[in-house]
Image 1 (tube, helix red, strand yellow):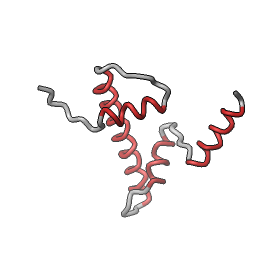
Image 2 (cartoon, helix red, strand yellow; image 1 turned 45 degrees about the horizontal axis):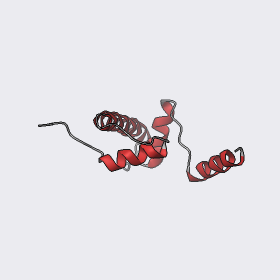
Image 3 (tube, one colour; image 1 turned 135 degrees about the vertical axis):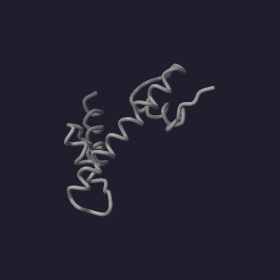
Image 4 (tube, one colour; image 1 turned 60 degrees about the horizontal axis):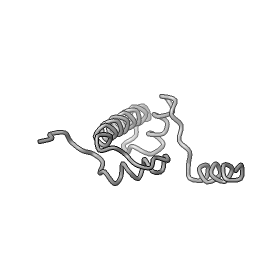
Length: 93
């Protein structure tokens, strides 16, 4: 019996993998990906909480998470930037 906590469903992991261009995943890849995703999200929230505490705010915001991620060198594109990059990529084909 497997006692590990699963944070993400197999369909959600597969959907993320497909967006990244993966056609299929082996059965043993799911728990590894689940563990990695959970750890990264926990790290993002912790970093966001650090920014949140520095601001002295009561509510953790998306900006707190984003600024915390930027401190680690991770940058996120908003929806408009993603649309522009996809349009640029398709025009290059």
